[in-house]
Length: 302
Length: 302
Image 1 (cartoon, rainbow over the protein chains, first blue to last red):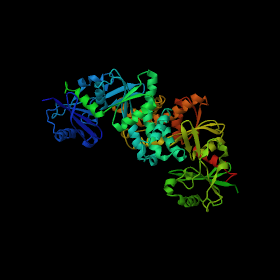
Image 2 (cartoon, rainbow over the protein chains, first blue to last red):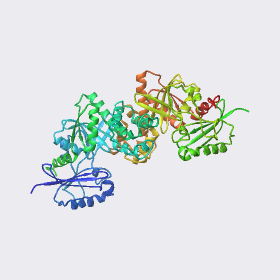
Image 3 (cartoon, rainbow over the protein chains, first blue to last red):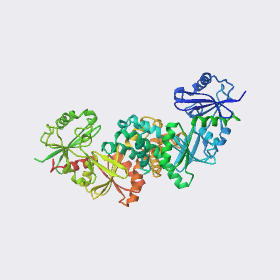
Image 4 (cartoon, rainbow over the protein chains, first blue to last red):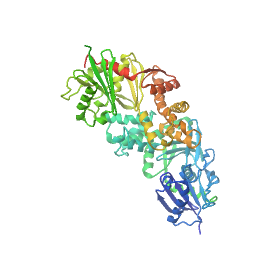
């Protein structure tokens, strides 16, 4: 019988589980809304994991590797961040065993990473597992980009983290849509091509978002721009701010001008368009495949 | 009997009224929450103004000058923006008479301004009246800064608007406090001196706010920074972004390095600290005095 391992990407609002073999092939997967917040307290994670195994019909002999907010101070068990000087390929040697007696020896948490630079500290929990998968798939250099609520940009050199920056892109877009000055014009189609390009071009100017976002409204009330384009312009400003910062960093370091996006097709398309706008070469990796590959890297340890 | 004029600063959420003589002295003032939103519809502004006159015991023979959102598309009567090439001192020649038959001939609205540059369009409604007052008080050159929900930075040269930028500083601070990733650490004292200085220093690096704001949280969860400082750091990041942009513009233009803040003492202190951090000389003007001075400039026309 082949060995199997269960990987659980346990985030704030959702969890995704993948049963994988040692080659990284996905044998079964499951996704539900039982994220950290919905679990509702440290002492309820054990039951939540037991329920997941039952739902997926996975035996208790299968080792479990968990990543994401499950290892945060508000999760099951806080696992300290690794310093970014630790290579991604050494993650399997830094797994934290779950202390809970019911799971001892067969359930581990992947530590997140912490990176310090002149601009302070940045952190990740969960994305390090995706990065390990990307490295295993041969993406060891250049920008690895994980778009979403909190977009992560990680510059790798030979599998080592050189820099790490998180952008509250998805969260700010949702906030600006939910209320305030811009919300009345945020109901339209955020994928409008022309509006998105306008936002990206504006982002290149490196003016503060607090100003460029206001100017989306100023354009509409002064009848200089159609209100229907506003969501796409805002999307272009927020995503463009990520690219503008990376472009500045590239200029300073003279690094390679390619990015690898690990994201859903819908998000990957927007990032590919932005990459083209900023003159960067863009590869796309499927996040499920990357995650399963990463989980298979833990076989010797799990 | 001396001539009098009533100036009404009619904003989104509040209105402030000042009865002034022709020298700009304030004879009476009133403030209430009957802003544009609370009035509740175009046809109810006439009654809302009549109520204000009654409350202040001001006769109907007194001319009324109104500024702010009262002249917007959602206000009493939409007044088109003036182009920024029109000098502030010519505002009295561009007053819009209120069309409402009850007020014809004795009630006017001050138009806002619209400014176009390489970064698009910016607009103001209400602040132009403050600017006119500042110019009348001799502040004809340098940055005029009106901090608040939407902070305005206006560069004047000999009383002419050279540039205009609005920053959603107060609105973003309120949004980030009300919900989302940072909100749990935003309850503390935003005037912490050390935290504010950290935020200002970070802002000088010109990284996107979507990143620097996330790093406030990253500092706390990685135990690199105290959570209690977070609100002051966020305040420093947002206000610092305004100064960083102005400093870049100064560098490009070689203009004068002084700012004049028109704001409440509490806000003026924060801006003075930031100005010092960025090496700018800072004057402070009282907004009530500035407004009354501005209103007195309308005497010949009203």
